Image 1 (tube, rainbow, N blue to C red):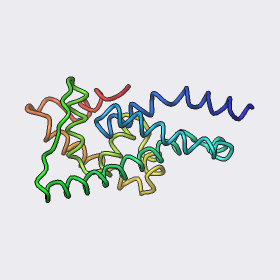
Image 2 (spheres, rainbow, N blue to C red):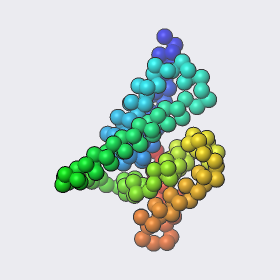
Image 3 (cartoon, rainbow, N blue to C red):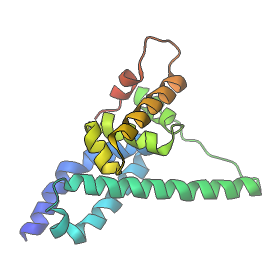
Length: 172
């Protein structure tokens, strides 16, 4: 029973944070909640092993991010098929600075976006982002720099606003 209690406590302590991170990544609250639920449901049967990890939350986040990227690839294939058939595209409209930044993040390449979310939203140091993504620290630094440049170009009409300031809107 203590395993169930431990998982429940872990879930309650991390669920909202993970949904917030996934919202920034996907731009859709419903998708973020669904991805988080799926990641936690995959963690539950493996909890005795995962709970022994140094950062169980990182395992769940990585599963959720991988699910998000798989879903995106499927959606892109579906959209390409619709375009071939002449179908249209729906667009969800929401308000707020965080939503503008989230929408602009969609134009940033996936790996750059993932690094931006882990560093600025999850607040992981560069070495931890590198470890979680399985790449060298210099690669993460490059992705962060390029991601900030792309985000800045997409959102900033004036030169006084920095990408760091924009990304600070995304922290829960």
